[in-house]
Image (cartoon, rainbow, N blue to C red; front, top):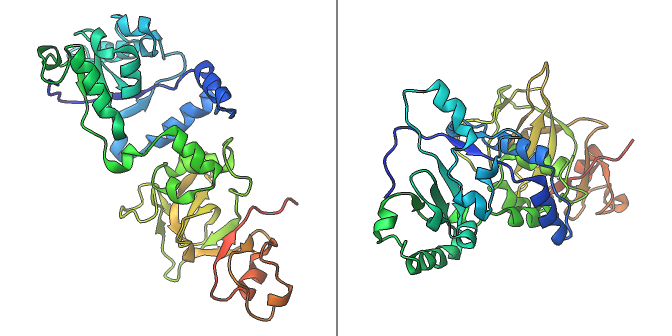
Length: 329
C-alpha cells in the first residue's frame, strides 16, 4: 500500500529527558543527557550513505512526535515540514511517523492513520506476528482495504544483524566491556564516546594509551566503521607519524578503536585500524599482560600489574598484550 516517492528525507528526534530519566531510574541506571543523546545521534548519521537523514534540533520535537494517545490523534502538520514546504514550494511532501511495533501495539497506531497522519512501523525479532494479529483483529491487516490505503505501513522485517540491536543490549554490552558485540553494532564515534565518557562504561574501558601510527611503507591507513569492514576509509585516514588514542581492542586483538584528535577546529577522527601499525610512545603507553610471561623479566612480572608497554613487550614474547587505562600522574 505504500506509494512510490522520488526522494526521502528522514529526521531523528531524541526522546525527552523526563521520559528517559524516568525509564533509567526504574532500572537503577544513570541516563545519558538529552543534549548528549542528540550529539551522538548526529555523529551516527554523518556518513555518506546517510546524507538523507538528519537530527531534529532541540525544541523541534513537538507533540506530534510524542508517544501519547493525544499525539496519535493529532492531525496538525509536523513543524519539521514547515521550512521544507517554504523553500521547496513546488514539491509535495507526505510525512510519515516511524513507530516501533511496541509503540504501535500500545497505542493502536493503525487506528489513527489517515492521509494527514501517516505511519511506518518497524519490527524485529518475534514482535512482528503479534502486531499483524492485532491489526487483523481490528480490520486493519495487510489484506484489508484500510491497509491498502497506505496510511499505516509495516516495513519488511529487519535484517538479522539489525534485529538484535537495542539500547538495552548496548547498555548491557558496555557494562560487560563486551567489545565483540559492540564493534559491529555501534558507530565507532558513538562507541568511543561511550567508552570515554558514557555512564555505562567499565572502569578500565578507556582511554588505553597514546600510540604513534607508523607503517613500513610510510602510507596511510583507512579507519573502518567496524573490524572486518571492506570499505575504503569512510571514517578518514591515519597518516604515518600521527598519534592516536586507543580505546578498545576487538576480540581478535588485531584491530583497535582509535581516535585522532582534531586540530585547527577539525573534528576528531574515529575508527578501527590494525593494531600492528600502532607503536609505543615511551612514557605514555601502558599495558597489562593477558598471557603467560616468558623471558628474562618473567620472574618479576605480575600478570595483573600495570607496566610500561616497552618492558611488557620484552617480557611477553609471543603472547597477547591488552592495553589498560594509563596511570594517573
